[in-house]
Length: 427
Ligand code: LLP
Image (cartoon, rainbow, N blue to C red; front, side, top):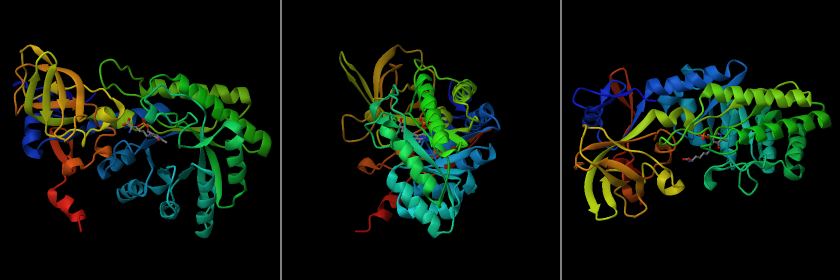
């Protein structure tokens, strides 16, 4: 977890900086990201998988140039899924050959830019894309390294919108009905492509390793079929991301070394059974690296006790800086961080300032009953899919990301301004 403590006055500190001075210096709301914690998690993943595997951080969870530099320094690779993420990665100096390019509907322009930049792999997601990537690579006189993303038919036990390996959804090429085998056939025939492996991502916020087990079994099954049909053993498999983190105390996440051990064992065992050389494994954790490393710091505004129900505590942000509660029914916790309190706990709901009743940040939480406007509260575990999914709904300005480390804070993504909003409005 973050290097969180309380100082002598009961004010919470993170990375050696107290939240009151963070609020004074940078304003609220703000995402406060602990650089040391981020680096430690990145390093733990890298170390757990060792030299025979690659860890691609999934940029969609949260991407900024500082983050790209940290990843580069810690020896991780990067998964991007849009031209914007690619541009961010390249502009921060991530070597292109350490970038994987994903997406179910990459534009021609995005494909061209990725190939021109020399990305290490493009993950092909459809039959059309096999042809498009091959064509553009050939035009550019290149042979692009690619993987094919398949859907293995696993029902991951997670929210419907973030499960991705069952058949009735938009990602990948189904293993069922021989479609994946057909995709491989076509990719192997095209000169512009060098097929290096098979990719599977089964979903997100997963705790149960059995889904990965089934996925690995089926991916290796396909590798075996490819060997039998074409006489080639593809050298790589990617098992995607999706490892869950603790949002509340009910969640019990696995450590990177346990995950690495489990995945490596499954793949090795399956390959031995199929008499295949064990391929190089890669994984794409996003949330598990960045999620726990940040909290959102809010200032309490209006407080509305509703008799017999709960107290509505409004903060200066809301669904524009954290859509996850509204979108996925996600659970978060919250704590008073600008002081300690011995007051009785009250049942509270933390809500934002947006014009809709679904604008909830924390559905059910206990906060001290002496909570007052001006208090600072923090919602932990907002490092992943909060800033990256933030919006300007109601023309609310997106908060900054402030990195703390060794007693110092620095803005790595600045707060949006009204000028930023007006700059886009050219009518
Ligand atoms: N690789 C691929 C191909 C992915 O599609 C994803 C996530 C990841 C890796 C990283 O997954 P992670 O380790 O972060 O779970 N917005 C949702 C999550 C959507 C995930 C989309 N793909 C959320 O807030 O829960």
